Length: 466
Ligand SMILES: *Cc1c(COP(=O)(O)O)cnc(C)c1O
Image (cartoon, rainbow, N blue to C red; front, side, top):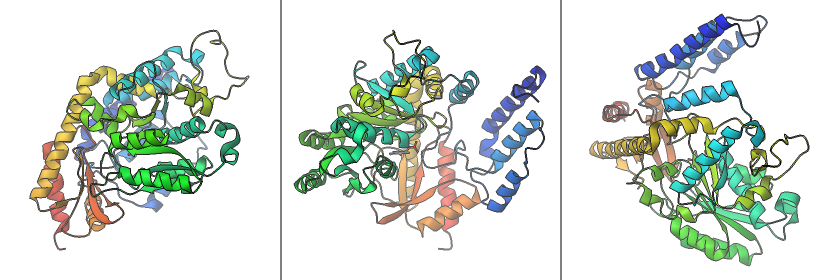
């Protein structure tokens, strides 16, 4: 059988695929939100394929759809109160399929002129939402927030230490160190390890009772490191922590970074979408001062994974970190004033990540996104109030739709029972290194007041007997 498949087989395949997608969208709420966890059974299902003979394409698609319906946590389920994974916008699903079918490689401008310019246009549109001017906005689409944060570290290093891209940490006169709150995302640790400065280069700055970074502690840590001969180069603020949706004092952190001559990065992987809402945008005041920003379209913007965005107002930093020309890349656009993306990002061959973002945004428009963000925020508020009414203690202060709470028993055990029931998906975590709590996030634009009420009822069921 050819890889292309015959015309008749393709016809059957598309129909079956579309039917499976539509069946899932319509039916996901009827099933459990989470799967049974049985490694032996999963391995046995996988091992049944020895690939020795071809299988019927339609049967295979139906096998996958039927079994994914059973064997995964379902972010598209309206009772998935999880870790920032979205119900995908339908236009994003179409966009990802089209990106796969046309399969342009965005590494070189000449290979996908429209694709590259649509992405550049989107970068400027997001930059505008965060207060960057169109002329200064540069950046790249990434696999996700972790890659965007890794990019941020690489660009900050290459900008602050002109020799870094060439000679690495061994070219420095001292130990480079950077700063983020104790509640920051752990991707910065990985990035520090991978970039050769070591995980120990990340200084965890203490947070206040509201889990926000303490700017005075940041300033003190920088002074202490300088006095010891180390080289502070980057301060990171989080706009919407992964744990608790808390926004660091962006303006105050920016002021410390500026006074100390540090690069200022804002990790707004999830919380950045607050900029789409007129009501919430003031919460991000100060983000425009950032030298660079991480934003994940595959979180609160509800684009299918993976779609991260790295933005910077210093194009020269991207050149310094990633400018590695080669002889073998396409040259047709050499005389044009355009950018080859492989010279501006960590990736080389580059999927058209921005297409699903473009189609989602074009179809909904900013008003559609404002409505979605405001709806999810209202559902978060309802959840917070309902939990309070049911006697739970709320531990995080944020207007964004993440609620961390406890009472009525051990958070880990309650989360385990809820997830095992399949009625909803929630998690547990530890806040500020000491407070164990349940965590529920409104991360699905299809979640309604009825779903919120159902979660509170489910919780009630699984604490009984404690
Ligand atoms: C999710 C998240 C990340 C990591 O992003 P991925 O898309 O999972 O790679 C980084 N920072 C914050 C604040 C996040 O919430």
